[in-house]
Amino acid sequence: MSQPDVHSLKRDTLGTKDLVLLVLAAVAPMGIVVSLTTLSIALGTGAGTPGTYIVAALIFSVFAVGYLKMSQRITDAGAFYAYIAAGFGERAGRMAAWLAVLTYNAITIGTFGSLSFFSSLVLKDLTGIDIAWQWFGLLWFVATLVLGYLDVSASAKVLAVALLLEVISLFALDFSVLWSKGFQGFSLSVFDPHLVLGSGAGLSLILGLGSFIGFEATVIYGEEARDARRTVSRATYIAIALIAVFYLTTTWAMVSAVGVDQAKSVAAADPASYLFIINTQYLGTLATQIMQVLVITSLFAGFLALHMSTARYHFSLARSGVLPQWLGKTQPKHHSPFNGTVGQLGLLAIVTVCFIAAGQHPYLQMGVALFGMGVLGIVLLQCLTSFAVLRYFRGQRHTESIWSTGVAPFLGGVSMLVAFGLMIDNYPVMTGSDQWWVNHLPLVFLLAPVLAMAGMASVRTREVVQH
Image (cartoon, rainbow, N blue to C red; front, side, top):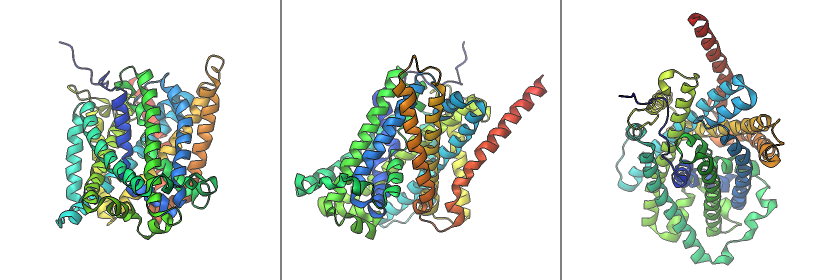
């Protein structure tokens, strides 16, 4: 009797629809609108926020051209580091691998902190029952452990239901504002370049790019996709388009609900409640209570999808010899990267305990700071990936499209580099903290080259001992 293959993921499991759902759930539309979009309206370009999402969509669409071209050559659950290694060599690849590990874990753990906090907050607001956020954290921890053990399609179904409900809720608000205001109430001035690129444009661009984080996961699931060459490309562009349309219509409605001239001042008065205030005004209290619950399902869907991506990075890096080998084994029955799940949740538990011991807020410090750090890391990885694609295809452009292997990767890389600079400059604004250590969390990324060199030295030592 043949032994089950514990070093490969389950093949031919995901179609285009499944990949799109996984990506959209990772984006967590409801959670993003409550946490990031309202901040863009309040502190960024204000009424120009809808236009910012068009700019972000264009940047990611150009980046995706080279990213997907590379995916046709290399199928690996650790896409970023695999592509950077192909373009710049093993040493750069290992540094990128550790950067990816730190990045994905940061954004996943940050989302976990926000999820746990808002779960407690919403329950108290709706029922008056006060349960500490740590108990909700334990609940989501166990739920993720179970779903991480099962077939990836099981998680996709959970994410699909959560996504459908939150999209319905937000589109209900959009149409309610449209019904009340009419088309004349949706001013085209929100797309005025002077407004979109005016005061606060840097912060709005950061928040806009952060709203798309998760779309790149289509490539991570390439090993589990049916007809990956077509499915991954199709799912990526569909996801970018749907995300852009969704945020464009929702932010346009949020601005139009109070008027272009008043949107920024109204949102700035209470960013956290801005969406709920508008929703209550147009749809009533009951609809807002439902929306509050959906914020929790949205955050859980986002956390689960991000966790799944992180677990696959652990799996891929362990299989490549970067991380401990036990992380590179799948669960025999479901072929899910369960060891990667255990590793990620173990790190999550350690970091969470550290934040609790330090007396830090689960949302304001743990949530916002780690999420912002994760966004910063992903943009840096996307920048490096673009230039890696450019270098990888350097000698092959006579047989490949100059657009997909030259122009698009260059434009994508430059765009991401500019975005990275803006993020560094505005990181303290993103965290909303005046604590030095919180505002300098990205310095943790400097561990990436150190860990990479230590890992390579360890491999060489083992090889010498074996010989």
